[in-house]
Image (cartoon, rainbow, N blue to C red):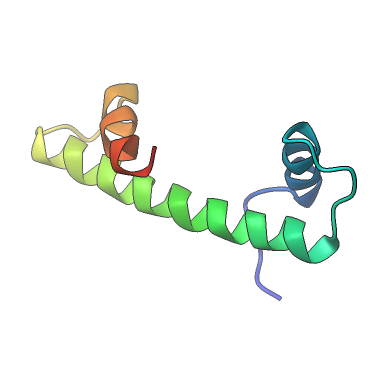
Length: 71
């Protein structure tokens, strides 16, 4: 099993807040995997944007712009 940056309990809470009465372990794990993939893609794009702008620091605007295609 690979290590994860996100806690599984947060996935249960997200699914519950979305209206689920019950949440399976598999659904929480799947949501975590998908969110991590999306987050990694957004982070890589944000880093590229900051680098292209000649900065080493990733700013909130970079993350917002990088997330546009996913929202």
